[in-house]
Length: 120
Ligand code: FES
Image 1 (cartoon, rainbow, N blue to C red):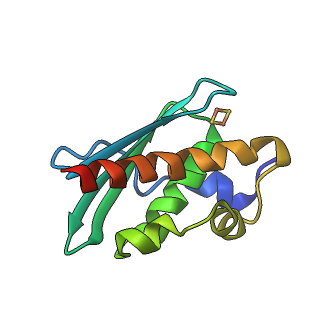
Image 2 (cartoon, rainbow, N blue to C red):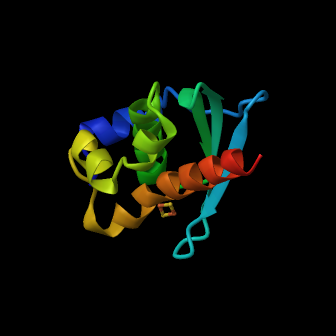
């Protein structure tokens, strides 16, 4: 069902874990399955210096969020917001159709984290 790349990011995500000194945190929930995902950001000079995530989501959500973190590192906040579900899906070599909705969870949490950062 999943590609090798999806399984690799699911089994050994590089960016999984809480960030104690985060500058911003965003949380998003998936209405279809009830899963929750949190994104942590460390920001310097308007760029994402460090990023990590935690989730109770499925393998697709874990892999997609790990890839999102990889794609966000070193990017400006605007560039990070412009990363699309298609970018993530292309990087992973496609997700099963039924799992497409899982890949947007990370993006929604990222958006909330950036909004939270801009408010402060
Ligand atoms: Fe819940 Fe994928 S089934 S995030």
